[in-house]
Image (tube, rainbow over all chains, first blue to last red; front, side, top):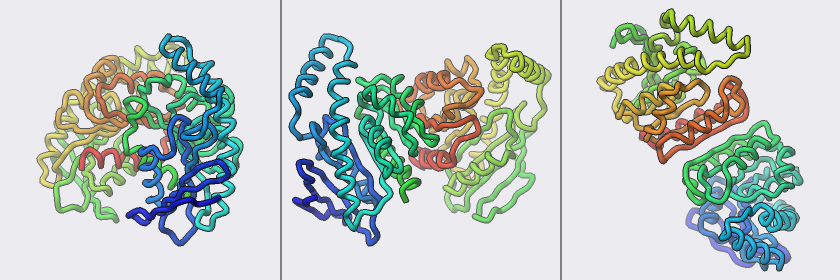
Length: 240
Length: 240
């Protein structure tokens, strides 16, 4: 893991860009003497890690005392896109305009992205936990499909907050029953591209006994800011 | 409004029993120089106002700086039950054992209870707001069916937290569209006697633009304590 730049923010948070092989990432760490618990903040493939909303959330969590890390995994954010993914995206646009069913196309796009992203996130977790300023436990935040994959494959993840707005491949819908960590599931009630009933079915399917659903009125990007604070308290209960 | 007893609790909260005509109530007020905002904490008809879980929640809200009031409305708690309500309850037990549909019986039991309770709560609100130690604004907490009635009829209510576990009469399901105050709707995902889909439909129906659903795994009485704290923050956002 190579740090390529750093800046100290007003509230003492250290924000560093890093690379791990081909993987570009950002790490926020709080001003703290003791090793901090860690939150992996994973975003859906369409957003780059420098998206202002993601950065604002990361800084909020760092101000609560967490190390927060995010990467652009293979095919995500600003990383090069595979020919297959580009073809799936073009097909998706065409099918949307034609009003055709999208599930098969989403499956061919998102399924491989999750499969490729998971090992990169696990390698990043290894590298992060080797830093003296990061202790544990480890929480996960964001992209549901990847989070299910990681929560099942990665025993170091102790709690997870998922955002329901995004296609969840069939394999991860099946794996949801194996998720046993405490869970906060965040749903936008009128998310345009994500059927509500499918999200409720997924919440029902999660295997964990300690799961909470928060749903708010509004579309995909309308999540109110107080949910960021509620998320912070969720991590405080499980990671501190 | 006659105060009939009082005790000062360890954290400075004053807990007073009162009567308003035939209505017995309890009022908790915080140690505070300024008039406090008020939360009306209404419970489903089956519980008396002295139920330990209700009292714990009231004391928690008072410790946050709220005046909290509850009453046993007509036919509720320890108040005498009408012959019609007693007959409906007997019929309910019989139908439950026989596995018969319950909606009509619930309608005949809960509908009149809401109609009778609402004016008593409004009279209590008048009396409470005349006390110098209580200012406003006013929040509502608890019994959904009564809360819908009050939120529609009573412009002084500025925010409401509803617990989804309880039969909501047809009239209140219709009125839900007229509820426009900020709303926190609390659902137990596996509430034995309260169909989940009906609660989700009700959440969908509320007319307010600022509504949040919190759902937790577990049965009717399994609400985790952190929801009391989340509720406190909801009131803080809207009443302080």
